[in-house]
Length: 214
Image (cartoon, rainbow, N blue to C red; front, side, top):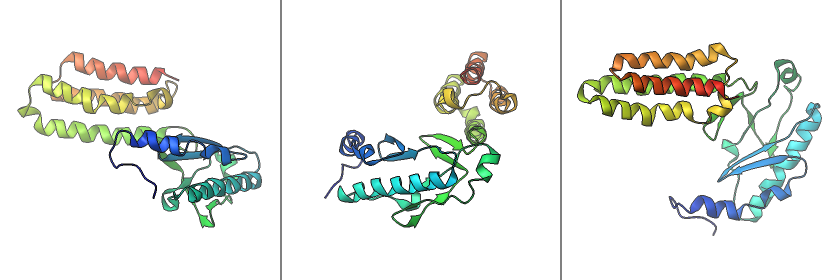
């Protein structure tokens, strides 16, 4: 039997140690490991070569996991092709599988908290933020009359600012004015919540710092 204690702070470390040599079985792909999240990636100008390389390399870690008494969750495994629209159209026939089980192709995927799409525009991630932030502002708006100002500010700093600050060096694009304006406009919604100008400025500073990191 193989496993780690559920909820233990050592579980991610123990799992990482156990699967640390998994990348050694790959021949033509690179791999990123983060606890039980594994991402394989490679590039090619040829759709046939890309499909051949990945199908070959996908079976290798699956076999390695089987030999080490672990399994791949194929139903949760997806693949995504990244490139310009013209290039992606020429790769429409690419199919990938793990041990003869076909993988679903997606146009966007949330990996380690950041939504990546096939064009690397980050629009899907920003749209996700533009949904999450109003939800939390709505919660604050419903209870604002019961909370003192300092608690409202603490709520913003702990539940909204982290959403905008997480991985902003990756998705923040100062050259995409429309995309960044969608984030910046959330600052104005705070004015109706009777927050101090200092808290509003904090949100504004995080928005602009996100846009400035490229």
